[in-house]
Amino acid sequence: MKLKNSVRAALLTTALISGTVAPAFAADGGPAFSTADQAAATVQKATGTTDIAPDSTRGKVMATDRGLVTVTTPASADGRVSVAASDGSAVTMTLPAAVDAAGTTSAAGTTVYPNAAAHTDLAAQATVDGGARALVTLKSADAPTTQRFDLGLPDGAGLIADGTGGYDIVTSAGGAGVVVRGHIDAPWAKDANGKAVPTSYSLDGNTLVQAIETGPDTAYPVVADPHYTWGIISGTVYFNKSETKVLALGGTVVSWLPHPAAVVGGRSLAGIAGYAVATDQCIKFKVNPGLAPLSPGAALSGSGTYSGSAGDGYCR
Image (cartoon, rainbow, N blue to C red; front, side, top):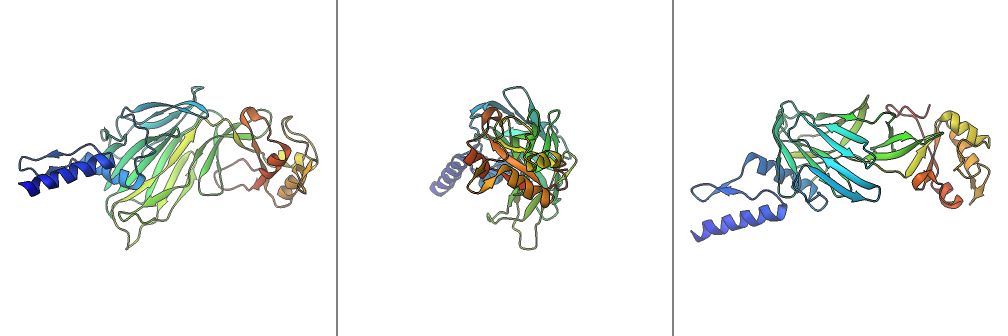
C-alpha cells in the first residue's frame, strides 16, 4: 500500500510540475490518465509551460508593448486560433483537423484536441508575448508529415519571407512600402527524446504549409509548432523595386526616411539601394513606432536588402 501511494504521489507531483490537469485514479489505485491529459503532457514536455498565458480560459487579453492583444483558442478543432490587436484587426489560423474534436484545456493553459486527424493530436496555446501557438503531435510514423494551416489576414495584409525560415506579416506603411505588424516564427519540431526534427515552411496562397522530415531514427511522438504574433506597430519597412530605384537615384519616397545621400560609417541609403538594384533585390529599413525613423546611424545600420521569393510577392 505504501508503494502504491508513493507512485500515486509521484505521478501527481509530476503532473502538477508539468502543468497538466492532475490525473484521476482508478478504483485499484492506479493512474487513470485521460487521452487529453496525455496529449497535454506531450505538448508541454516539448514547449515547457513558462511562456503559456496562465489564464485557463480560451480568450486571453494581454498587455504588451504594442497595446492590448486578445488571443483566443477555439473550443473545438474546427475553429480558428485568433490574435487580435487593440485596433480590432486580427490574424487567424486554422488547425489541420480532419474531425471536429472537442478541446480540453490543461491547468497550464494548453488546449488539446485529441485524435483530431489521423494518428495526430492538435493543440493551441496563448503565449505571454501576446502570440499563439498551433501545435501538431505526430503520434506514430503513420501520421502525415505535411500540415496545412490556413491564415485569415486583414484586408491589405500579406506575408514576406524573413530570411530565417519564418514570415513577416505586413500592411501598408502609408505612402510607400509595407510595415511589419506581425510575425510567424521559424518552425521547429522535436521528437520524444527532445531531438530536433528538420522542418520548414512554404506558402500556398495564404496557407502556411509545414513539412516535417521524420526518419527511421525518429522517436515518437513528434511535436511541431507554428507560433505567430500580430499587432506590432514598429519594426521593418519593406520597399518594392520601383521604390528602391527611386532611393538609389537619391529621390525620396516618404518624408520620414533620412535623406538618401546621407552617409554614416561609409554607407548611405542611396548606396544600399543602388546595391539592391544592381543585384535585383529590394531595400528594407528599420523604423520607430509611428513610422518615425531611427537616428541616421541606427537607421542605416538597420537597413538591408531582401529578394523576391515564392510567396512574398512584394519585391517586384
